[in-house]
Image (cartoon, rainbow, N blue to C red; front, side):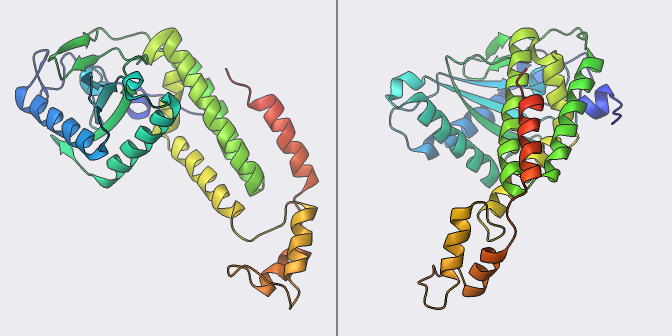
Length: 296
């Protein structure tokens, strides 16, 4: 697989000499933009209806807080919350808030200067790797971006992206049960790869650039679609995956059997005599997991 990397078309990295003029006056966020961002953040927090939930800070990050903004840049609003103050297990709270913000982003089509607003909820003690972070609450820079263009290792980013693209394409070779497991493994591998790159070399690391290549070429969406499709197939009537399941379906195929409403006699009969999962595919899957999905 060959992939030509171009800063603008593939990575959205077209460095400018100034911050986006629709949002900034010099290096200060315009007052009307800041007011609207604060209003949006407050509305989101109010809709959560969690007692004692307040934001320690509200920040703008991403390319609109940097010199690499482009025509696809979103407004990335981060709400920094002290999870420890809420007396809720951090992982449980993190999952809940992530689901709420995903639902909010999907439900609402809010834009500022024709740019989509994306809400993120972040534990104030969690590191956030970005070269540009602006505190909307305090109206000052937390991390001011450098105007000079960074050095990029595009060859390394391309090699990592191509390897992962091949892994994603290969998922189609397996049955839905294996596709689902392998999709989860690939998602975790990509997440760890990106995190390692961000911690080591920041947003312009080869690992983070590889993630950008995957996303801009539709492969992160493809991976999600494959995982969701495999999940749907797993819980639809299809081939049986074990002798115990086959025996159950054979019992349900008998006229006198007390079947679930969603299972007809014909469906049970089909699965009673239908195909079993492929042993050869199972071995191939184990080999793939062993050699291809190691983090790092």
